[in-house]
Image (tube, rainbow, N blue to C red; front, side, top):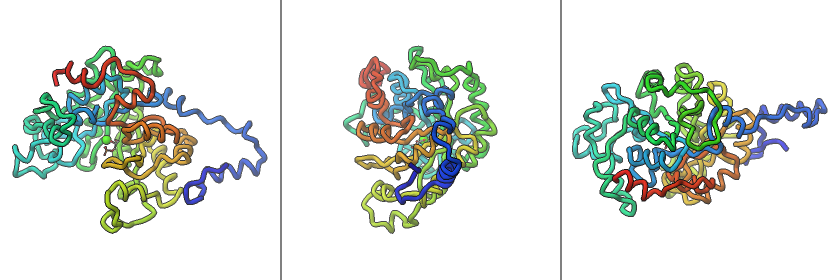
Length: 383
Ligand code: G3P
Ligand code: CA
């Protein structure tokens, strides 16, 4: 059966290939067996399915802090995910937003620069900020005194954390965030990873142990929404696996409707995104093809979450989309999924790994039971 999208169209190359096969009278027995997603992942040294701790264990501790990354590591997550930025004086560090307002006390410490992008601050300035207290205010039920005063983490800090537990050595899943703001960050990243020994590996396939991701071929995965950054990453680190992140909107997949959120009348962004879809099947396929041609080994599409919320976007992991991506020999790592109902939904749809804020829950879903629980780990680390 041809791959069809919700609008009933057939992706061009898949449709043509099928037609050609039928015209030639060739049965499926003679068609080349595509490599399975599990094999694709194994060949790259990437666990299947992969548990990617989004900004660390960021449901349980302030995102992108030592607490979040240490908990994710000790739970046994496969990857510590981070959004990479660069300080005014050249230090690489993890921060998601384009400024420091949401996750630090910048408004108190540097009121005149509170809206400035983080790259207008020196590393010494960034390290004065409290990156933990906001979490206690936002999530009182998960607040802990030990989160007060947590620091922004440099890439050096996160590498040290990733290497710090002999029982669990996660890999690093690094996004170049707003790369146009940081010209040359891809080369800086390469130099740092080289310096820290993270671009060399035994070159072996992933072993059976859950602890070995950070020591194998897939120890670093690079991710970006920007095709130009993907090109740079490919130029700088051709042998490191890369993922092109996908969403529907400006700079990524063209939407079917050009109506803005404000024009839509939808009550929430999540409701708006849920109604968005790619312009057509060919537009989706074009992005998958570009990911492959630029050297990516997979895509990182968005997902619509059952209970919506601020990380619920357009559903780009429909089964036919994942099949199309797999048929082109690429993996699918979906962002950002936190609840069992959605773990099941996206796994049933065929994804190969999940970005999650709740690594503990996802590990449980995969029957990978951590040797300790989140509260105990936080206490063990003094938080
Ligand atoms: O990197 C995957 C996912 O994190 C992309 O969304 O905005 O959370 O970086 P964002
Ligand atoms: Ca990210």
